[in-house]
Image (tube, rainbow, N blue to C red):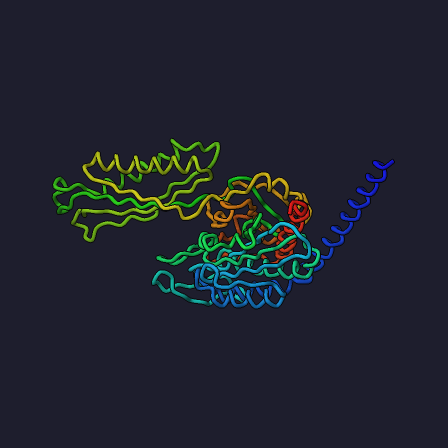
Length: 436
């Protein structure tokens, strides 16, 4: 009899909890819809007034003012211009971090919209146009809306939310630190210690209303390499007196192309080795003594990354040696692999399907672009997903890509972005509240 009574009580509690969650989620959905015009206005303001990495002063001020108006504890000047908000829920539970990047790009906008950017700035000593050509303005506005929703149900939150508004995702200016790596270095995942992190990226070539995700390697690591080839200078009329670094470098470039085509296991993961810059010589009739080439490496797993690093060293130094020259190779990791924890991803997919509809949630292919969200995921489990920003009915081939002057986002997907970030937070807290 006692067992029957206990079972009945547990079922009653479960039913009550389920009912409460359903009512809370309905409240969230209504709040998200009511905030749409506000979020769109924020986004347009940020779009019209973009700021480059480590220079997002006015952007940070607007974010700070909004968070403080919600009663959220705010930290400013994190990783130079970053803003962190801490919202302590009314009940004990895990700490969930939500991240948005806030910087723009050195791109001159040519989209015909009323709030188009006319801003100009300086990037590494060069005068440039400035534009939110990757959608960070939308990420910022969506997270500000998400903060307002979560603050309105603070007493019902089973844990703490940490809002991370991160500068310089596109990379800091030369000679400066910045971005997620610096935020982690300065302790953004501590005090309180973060258990999990979620982030989204708007996608101009994914239809509004859709969400895409991928477990494990989602976006590639980004390594930059420099190869300096040293030969022997001579008059261009007497090449036999030279050790030509240009001819040697040409052979090195061709050799590097065999790494992906002959050494990388492309059935498992994609990989890229690209030379983007070669600089040598000052006159057409002088064979120079030195040459420098620069390029990028993209991989989706650490095994491939290590192999490619080793092969670049082998190919460059041995080809140079065969020509009587020398090659000095330097490889710097700029961004880690954006890796979605597979266990966490599996648990949270139902949340995506609930907010977007199962028919609108897809597993996407891996992307060889890079994202410094990876520095958070290197320390704690996290999920980085893609939110549709392409007008309904548009062909993907007609949608302008990210980092281009014609980049365009349909704003009708912002409500789904808020619902996704809010519900990921609530569902994770619900799953893990009893562990704290």
